[in-house]
Length: 611
Image (tube, rainbow, N blue to C red; front, top):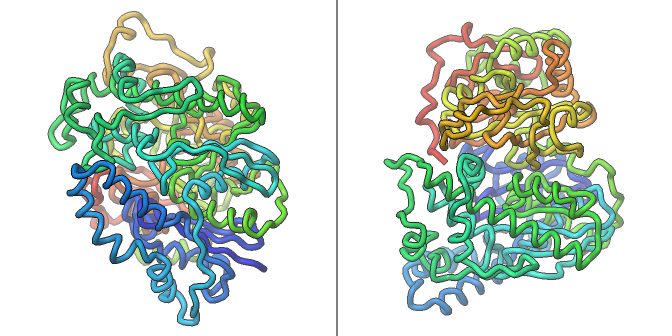
C-alpha cells in the first residue's frame, strides 16, 4: 500500500494527516496534544499519532509533503519589505533571523525533525512541497462528493496568493485565478478582529458572533478601505493598514476613519460601537463572497462549489451564498484553515502529481471529520482510575437513556465518544451538550462552563430528517459550516419594547422554542446528524426527541475559552473538574460531579491563556 504523510506547520494550527492508497486514514492538529491553542510548532505529536494509527514507521512512509513553499514565501516577504521601505524595517529586522536560521532551509529543518521519529529514516529525497492555496483547494475538492466543481479559497495569505479560483474535474485540479498579497479578504477581516480587541487568527469567529448585535452603519466607511469590482475582485488601500510592514494590523489613518482607537481587551468593554463595526465588516465580507461566487459561476458554468481557506469558516457568509442559489451544491472542507493544508497537500500529491484515479463518494470522503484519536473502554476506565475519577459503567441503552434524561433536566454534560474531530468544530465526538429549550442554557454554558463572553452563540445538532421542520434549510450540514434561520413557526416574535433594545440587552429575550441555539437575528449554525456518520450521537438525540418532542440538542466544543478541544479521557476529566459541568459521559462510563473527590477540583478560570 502506498502511504503519504501530509504536514502543515510554522504559521498557526500545525497538523498532520496520513493517506493510504489515497484514502484518509487519520488527521489531527498539534494543539490537541500539546494543549496550546493554535500551536504553530512542528507537529511532532500529531505525526506520531497518525503514524501509529496507520501502523507505520516513518521509514516505511512513501512520501512526505509540506503544505507550502518556503522560498516563495520568503520572496514575498523580501519584495514587500523592499516595496514599503524604509517603513517596514522593524518587522523586517524581527523576521529575518528566524528565516535565515530555520525557515529558508525548511527541507533540512524538516529532515532533522523527522529523523527524531525513526532512526531508520535516512534520506530527505521523499520530502515534497505543495503550494499553500493548491493545498487548500485540494483539501476542498478531492474529498468532496463532486466529479466537477469550482473551488474558491480565501484566507490571510499563503506564499503570494490570498484568494484563488480553481477548477477540479475527477483527479485534475488547476488554479485559474489569484488575488495576491497585500490584497486579502482574510487580512481585512483580521484587521477588524484586531480593531475590536480580539486576537488575530483566533478571534475572527467572535467578530462574526458579535455582528448580529449591531447594525452595519459603518458599511460605507469599510468600503473606503478598498476598491471592489463587480466581479468581486478587490484591492485594499494600504494607507489604512499596517500588516504589510508593521507589527499591528491597522494604523492611525484607519482609527481616524472610524473615530476610535483599537479596543484594549484588558480594560475596555465591548460597546455598541464594536457591535456596529462587527456588523459592518461582516456585511461587506458577505457581499464580496457573493460577488465572487456569482462571477465564477457565470464564467465557468459549473454547478458545484467547494470552499476552503480560513474565510470558508465564516459560516454566515456560507449560508448567504447558499441562500442566493448561485450554485446547485456547496461543500466546505471542515478543516478549512491551515490544519487542513496538511490533508490537501497529501491529496494533491496523490491525485495531481501521481495521477491516481479518483472514485467519488456521494457522501464525501471525510468520514464525518472523525479522524483523530479514539480510546476503547479498557483504556478509558484505566485512565479514569489513574486520575481518581468515580464512575459507573452502563449498558449502551441505559447510557443513552440516562444521558437524554439528564439533558431534558437542563444538566450540562461533557460528551466524549469515538474519534476526535479534525478541524475547529466539535461534531459530537468531543462536545459539551445541553437542552436547547432552556432559556438559561446559553448564558450558563458561556459563563459557568466555557468561561467566555456571554454574547457567544451555540450551535444546534439536529436529526437530519427533522431539519426542515425547524430551520429554513434542507441540505446536509454535517460540519456546522452553514448558518440558517429558524423556521417561522418555531419563532417567538419580539414585542415593540424588545425590538428597541440595543446590543447585549437583546441576549436574554426568548426568540424561539429552542432559545439556547437561536442567535439574536433568529439564525443558528446548524449541524445535521445521521446514523451513518455518528451512530451514538444520533441515538442520543433520537432518545432526547422521544422524551421531549425536540430533535435538537445544544452542541459546543468540549473545552474552556483559550483551551484546545479535549483529546484524551484525562483532558476530559480535567475540564469536567475545572468547570461547572454536571456530568461527564465518556465511552460507556458516566461521571456525576457531586460524587467526585472535591480535592480534585481545578481552578480552570486561569488555566489557559485567553484567546
